[in-house]
Length: 143
Image 1 (cartoon, rainbow, N blue to C red):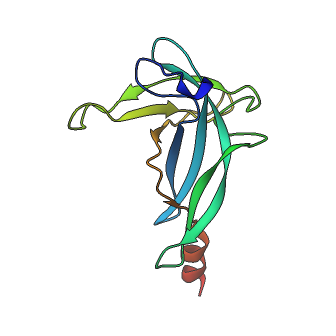
Image 2 (cartoon, one colour; image 1 turned 90 degrees about the vertical axis):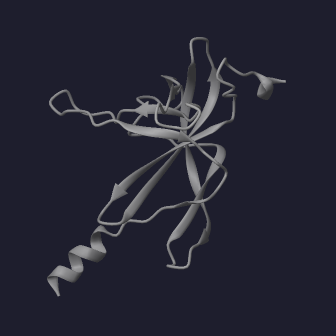
Image 3 (tube, one colour; image 1 turned 180 degrees about the horizontal axis):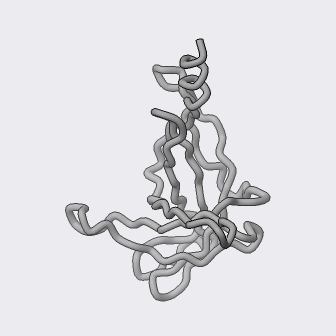
């Protein structure tokens, strides 16, 4: 079975990683990445997948989950999302058992801009809060 293939870190095909970038003052911008292949030397191939609305929290903020196998046409992290990108699995040295896997993602930027990296963590299966409050705060200041 293809889904049973694992690398030495027990990361397997179809596992999902996610990024959570701050957007606005208290906002969150969630992106999901699916493992489409596993390689040796702690490496995987990722493709960005679409997200779908799961529900809303008590503050009426969107809670999203990944839409497995529904790959986005493009990605700010992956030059060709039809092919994917090879990334290395890293581990959080501050975690209790040093067993929290993550992947360092770097957005595609022009050669004149400095790239800012963000960590993508193994998704725990729970919906993630996704909203942009930037306009909410900008508009309050204009009133």
